[in-house]
Length: 249
Image 1: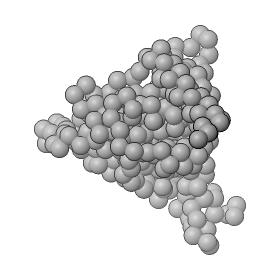
Image 2: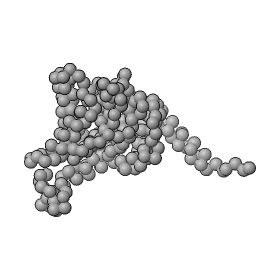
Image 3: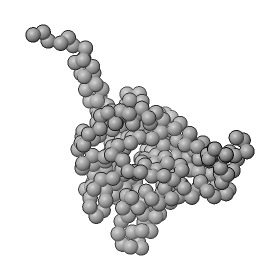
Image 4: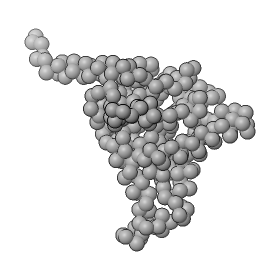
């Protein structure tokens, strides 16, 4: 195997590109990220490692704007994410300047996925070690969208999805509990999904909500703590109801 994992452009005999698989492993070790599409909003929630006491927490963001109507969350290498985000932002502005219209969510997703794929078949480079969740509202129809890309350059549309550490557990939870929601219920569903694998503290979670009229809004830590407390209270009430003895006839 050692001969085939040194060059990104060389397939192994069984059809693997090991550098791409190593990049996927970097994603699996990254902080968890969740995206949930509601009827009138889209919610991104990410796991946040505790910052040092003297560090400005505002400089450590895993959810960013690409344009007024599009946002991105990622799992994997933060330095790689910064490069990809800057390229995507330039493409958004270039498109707006050239055709005088904002990009669609699918367009910028295709662009990001194309960049990631390009770095899997060129000599002298390595794949981006990150997976992205891209959300936004279509500037023409107003429909909410959620897409995921991975280091291989593939992308797909979702109603709800997760990437990063323990993403399979979060995805299983979403498959069992997802339903069309709106407003605060969408935020709670994203928080519940992330709390399946993250310690129940507001400072461990970053949540952002995108609406068509107001764009992306990062929730304050106090707001996140209130949502976490509400979710935990509902979970405790549900468990208590299960343990309660059944009423006799």
